[in-house]
Image 1 (cartoon, one colour):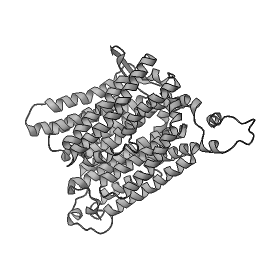
Image 2: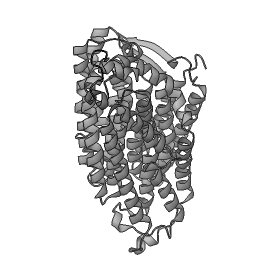
Image 3: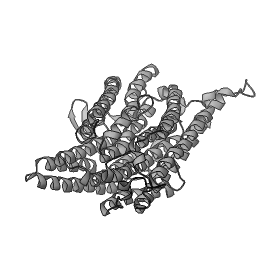
Image 4: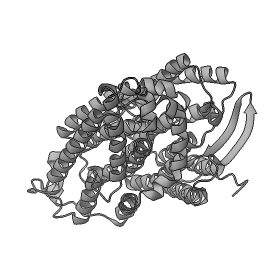
Amino acid sequence: MSGFPILSIMLAVPFVGALWCLFAPGSDEARARGARVTALAASLIDFALGIVLWLGYQTGGPRWQFVEKSDVFGRFSWALGVDGIAMLLIVLTVFLVPLCILASWKAIAKRVPEYMAVFLLTEILMLGVFMAQDLFLFYIMFEGGLIPMYLIIGIWGGARRIYASYKFFLYTLLGSLLMLIAMLMMAHTAGTTSIPALMAYNFPPAMQDWLFLAFFASFAVKMPMWPVHTWLPDAHVEAPTAGSVILAGVMLKLAGYGFLRFALPMFPQASAHYMWLIFALSMIATVYTSLVALVQKDMKKLIAYSSVAHMALVTFGLFAFNEQGIEGGMMVMLGHGLVSSALFLCVGVVYDRLHTREIDRYGGIANNMPAYATFFLFFTMASVGLPGLSNFPGEFLSMMGTYEISSWAAFVAVTGIITGAAYMLYLYRRIAFGPQKNADAAAMPDLEPREWLILAPLAAATLWMGVYPESFIAPMRQDVAAILVRLHPTAPASDAALTAPPARPVMAKPAIAAAGER
């Protein structure tokens, strides 16, 4: 595939589709029908290109593949390329977008061409984040994604959509302004805006602290980490179903990708210095958001809080400074992208029928919706980390990596998984089992063919990832190893090394060196 600009084509296809959705001639009804078909076709073409990207990616080959570069002006260039980490997230994105289009087929009835165009624009910007190899191209894509999601929530959302959309926009924008200042400092200091070059550049230790904190201000909000997570439940509750799917499935992963691409390799000393702050915030998020999820009455809000708890497992793993932790954090992102998307789609199925997300309005629907109840149970089991399904490999690796650096943090992470099982099973029991208290819920029909077409691929991918996780770990292994090379000299000691006195003080090695050998 040498010389074939597959990455640029993957960005161009949804762009052309969005233009056709907006400017196609015809009556309103014809334009709406055409926009649905056009958006689905464009997203399926990108999905096919994503499969080609995966099949063409050489595991163990060059670090950066499918590279495209064209100078635009000054230091800014149209520079695209992927490694194994970016490739997996790109495939996740192009897999979810057609399912979102199908989920919006009937749910979105007003301003359909504009909705489909905005959704395709969202796909372009998310893919651009993972493809960008220029610092400022990354920033444009990273921040540009705010605009279409702001419109999706604000125009096609629920009753409090204006409040939720403004809160989402302001939270994420304010954090990212600091990141822009940091990027300007980096470009001035290193003399380049090339991300691969910056990943190998050694910034002064004192400068690393400030750069890390600036990037952390942006990524912590996008992740979202406690205590800057409060925009997420509101955004999820008010967003249409497809908006919640793409927000949980992909947009929350942008920050995790940012930690892997910027914070860890570019600022290794600062990352080690602030590791315990990350662990502390992750421990609070795990316990607090899990307990808050237990008392929710809205299905979407419960799943939204569960997302915050799962993202804490990501930060645990990424900042464990070992292979198991980083690979586990990445696997949690991929598994959560599948399972959280499926859970929001399951909520959308019953919402389209009853137009309420109140848990108490349901009950006993396994009697009249057995296929739906089976899918919902399958994804609930995946969410709680059942072995053989997608979330288990990532959670296991993340906790194993965390345990190597801190047994206390690993213990708190385990409590989050236990409480996660409690609130997800409690949710399922109240919806699927028990007496049928409401006649309208008891009369809901089971899944229609379009809904089977949405949920079945997600179930297959969830099972594949749980049964054969090596197919997802192998492409990223070389890239994780490269990050560890940067982190190795600054790897922090474990809590055991910090508290246990050496048996022979004269011959004892420094704690950091000992941790590095382990």
